[in-house]
Image (cartoon, rainbow, N blue to C red):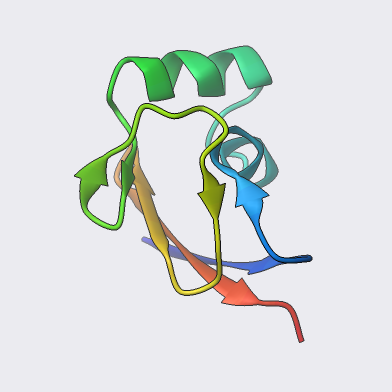
Length: 72
């Protein structure tokens, strides 16, 4: 399934995105998933908890894809 997420401002951090979309229930769960290499950004595993994500990027985790859009 694909989730569209509007980014407020220039970017959102990866851990914050996982919490905001409900893919992780807490910051700790988000950090653990990222550290375990379960999260992909634009198709590549990314283990940076605070990676700055911008509109146009895609995040895949737990069978879900999040497409980042610019807030209008």
